[in-house]
Length: 553
Image (cartoon, rainbow, N blue to C red):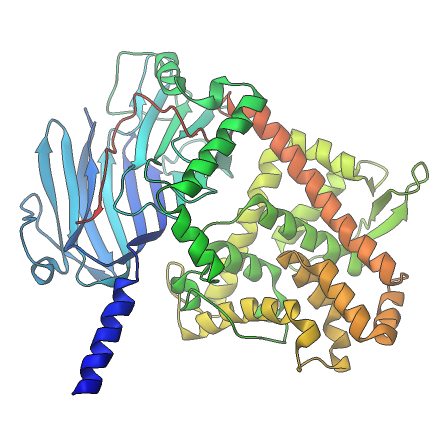
């Protein structure tokens, strides 16, 4: 009995140490031709108190919400319509959802939490009248994520998809802006994608403003106003009206505030503890094992999907840069690109494109085609050429990592590693953990008792995956230190020595850095015009929807 009591007390202490958390919020809005939107929200949360989860939605005006539903683990909650009673117990609300009308076009979407602990809820509803007909355009300025939630989300992504059956959305007919968070908004392959790059603070929110040319929609709701009036109201207090230097300072200031308040400390603690992965994909927040074989059958697309989808706190530009660099290094080691000394500059090395190179999938081939186009008629690619080309074609380059992730998701589905959505089964969790285990092995290679010379045949994959992890130069140094004779023989097969291999790794990084500079320059110049780029932490006035608060209560 004493042992049972002690165990119970320890469990209570451990539970008390857990914090309320919104690990990830993934929102999809599919816009129909009449301006309505099919909204799907996936909440990945940890709850430690309360009996229900709720979302206040106000400022609806002529808009209305129907078809509200909630599900978890494939089980659909019982809907109580507008008869939701907030004054019930945890058990009485379990497996149920409903709406609380608040008057003046406001309401609360509610559902029972069921139990304390980790949950992944899928929320769906139809939002009628989102896209409205203005005098000179069709548009909306809508708050998709509230501020002052019970726990600030650590990562948020919003996808606005074209379900009109009409023309594709391009920057010729669509402009986009975002407010209230640190991140960006872009038009990627005809889909508007807004994503946070830093954890939300208590005052963070996600507002998206999108303008469409007339003719793309037949809105059921109209407003007697111009889009210019909507734009001016939203831009007030935003950094879209500032010059580039001021915008950088404001973004930095916003990032500092996000770190200091509303979850920033939680993120720092979690990162220090190594708890940076999503349980839905890995089955754990922390992967400490070692895995010595090349994971995921050596499929870089599956590796990128695992990193991108599995990161609790979102990916950064440096992660994308490592992805680009991994493919450059892969192509050089496979002979698809050949380093050439620049005849005019001794310290500069260019890349000769192999015109008849073949590829295992269309996603890799598409990136190689971009490099070939940037190289021009002579087939010799210079870093500055790719920067200039990326500046002129930012959408194609910026959209490519999402295409890679999509192909990687296909790897998981083809190998039956996914249960539903992005949630893995046991085999999928083992596959995902093998990637992080491989990274751990490469990082600790010098102290691993599992290393053997027989791994020489895997060294190309070691270096390419290490480039994806951002540690290729360190792995090359470790291989040279541990196996000097074998590594010299290995690098000689590529016509280089150890120093040449290190230069090749760094050159791959340089090319990816040049691409990112080109994209950044284009985005900075275009963001004020609505051609994608960084979000503004301030501004967003005149929005519809949303409100303050929400989460567990």
